[in-house]
Image (tube, rainbow, N blue to C red; front, side, top):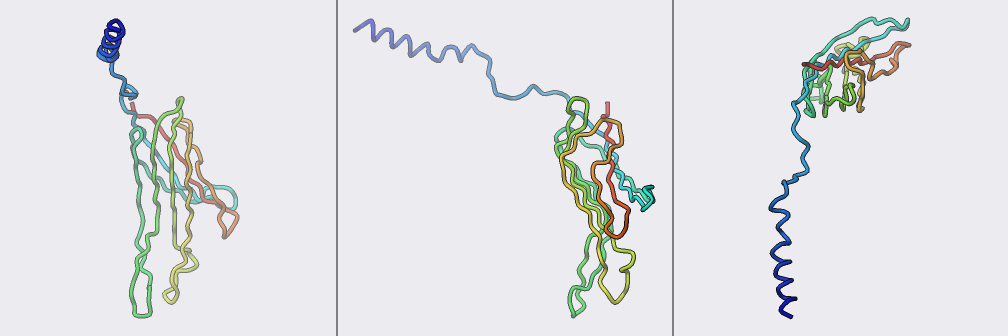
Length: 172
């Protein structure tokens, strides 16, 4: 009986001993220096002939696993009631980029692009403006340094299309 009690006491005192000598494992990945990426977004209007008829560029720099926004546009006044109340609607380009990182030499990120404009044939003082809107959201994986079309949609008013091209380069 004494041997059993002695054995249990020794076992109780030594049960936590390996933890005293083992390195603490927190489950964290060792910190590596962050990557920074230069992003160039190009919004292109492609005409009926398949040639680019208009393009606009937007650029930003983003770091690993961060969130970034690009906003450019105009606030368009729209009559919102018979009393003459005015409401402003944002028209322009909005691009959101989240969780940017490198995967096997390629750029990966979740990207949302929202491009809106006033229809050219609808600008009359007596009628509210007609707004055109294209909105895309996707996770993208593109080659570094190579311009790549990430979003594209047909123009509903003709045979042309609107597309968003992304060029991502890693900053050393």
